[in-house]
Image (cartoon, rainbow, N blue to C red):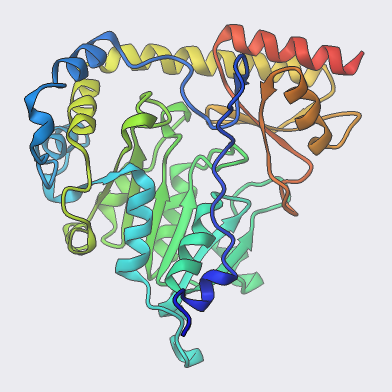
Length: 363
């Protein structure tokens, strides 16, 4: 008797970025914010490490939802909190997508679709659920195809049960305008998730689309911009009907209490984070100019990382050469990402050390 589902024997699990075990590495591979949470957040979390640790947290993260609803000008019923946005992406697959259907007439109901290259968790979620995957390439410059192009090429399924669109995109950093996204959402019949993990570093957001269209959800996280990766807090904004469906498949007490406290304190100190966003964007643009001057082909970015094709050596070799100089970046050994490195925007000091390592390689 087989104890493990057969599909898991073929599953290629999601591979997170390397967590270094050696000291002294400059970690520019997982898009973490180089700056710590605000002093107010740190004080608040430390003060909460008391007898409350024996108690269950609020099961619906009510106070956090209430504060987020005020921030986004919506109702608490429009928001659900998750153990990072990754949990909510998985819940959406369970809530809105059927496992693979036997009949081709039902393909759309069992289809999870996304553009490539994009967040590599999406195909893993579809595969775990036993759903059909529809991976559609972006344009050659990694920009977003229009609905007209997608209809002409007949690759995109406008009736797919669930469509993921990462905006700004990862790993490319490309930003998409709200007008582009609105056109795609309007043409789509199934659920659309606009994954805005990096939106705080972008020129505009598409949050209003989650309140305009009943089939659109916007995903946000406290990890990338708000320095709370350790606490794992994410949320969706969307129509109460979709939010209620997600709530039905959510685990009880899915968000830890210290995480809820940290996120609430973060929302009470937003000016601190806004300063950090501006600082990271300035470092990003300076690093882009410097790398371009050294022969790198750098894509325009609206995220906290750069996607760049390095000169002289293949990207995989650059990964090893940089690591030997104690600089850790990300390389995706895939058809669409093999020629590129993804470099997280670190502090000004870390950017200077990266450039020093690059120059030593190019000598």
